[in-house]
Image 1 (cartoon, rainbow over the protein chains, first blue to last red):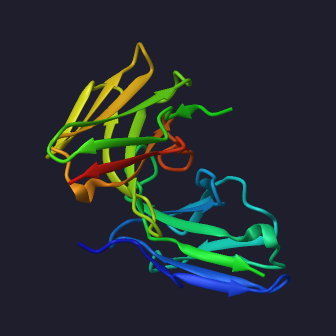
Image 2: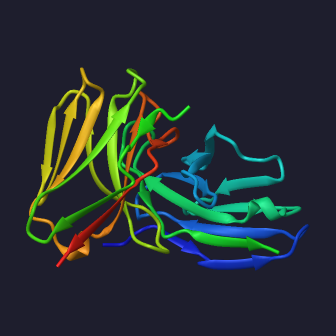
Length: 113
Length: 114
């Protein structure tokens, strides 16, 4: 069965550069969530979208922005990258917002040097 | 403050035996619980869930038990297989929040010995 696809799998950027992470949800899923997992930490919720509208916002820095497109894929844009942004970024998708299982992608490992 | 706790960082079990992974939570508003499995260098994958209206949910070799009065849930894997070796995360959410506010435990590394 199709799963959540994230690209790229690995990304290396320098400080102050920008990065764009992409997430393709499971077909027919209308909700996308972004999580950040730093080394040795739990995944932290960043932001979510439902039907192309932002539905909730977590601990996402102002330097980051995201959107969901008409085909339900989502992009996380990260600007003025800092060393502390190095982490694994997970995208998850679900059908609907409330109390549904979220299926995670394999993550994008971002390294800022 | 950690609202979802997995007090055992690791667990080793012989192949064919039962693996029991435990999870405790502190927030009585949590009403939906999930288990995720994570292999090295991969994202967590959803395994099984349970809502607070049930006390047991089975899916093949995996069974999750929920004890609301004790704020405790457990994942049983019977029989354990070497391919089950991974880190298992327990997660919880409150009503109406879905996966927006999943509170994760710190994980338990399960090693199934052939």
